[in-house]
Image (cartoon, rainbow, N blue to C red; front, side):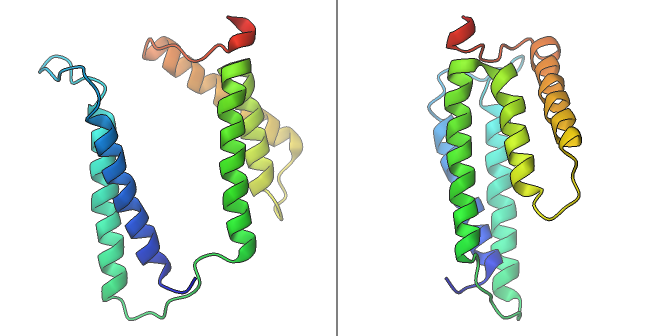
Length: 154
């Protein structure tokens, strides 16, 4: 696929922003001055996606740089692999819960993207566990939200 990488990236961001905004319009909780509801953060993100995507796209169109191929065959294979891993993560979270599935997926993803670097296995394990625990503590204790416990533990 030939074309400017930034044009494709910008267009994808704009489309993603529009899709996120359209999805948030289905939320039925009303927005009040005391509680903005669950729509606020996704709407801000959608707005950011559209604005940044338009900026990237327009800057790329105005730019005089020659376009290159966006992804090679190996790059597309890696994209498909990541999507499959994320689908597996969602299934794993439904079955095993957040605290088991998240460190596993983080380790798998850091291993996948550590190819060619001197990343130690212990470091990836430590990163995976600490990141999952920190996110858990923030969501459960700071935000008062629950994370999936999985079918095995409910």
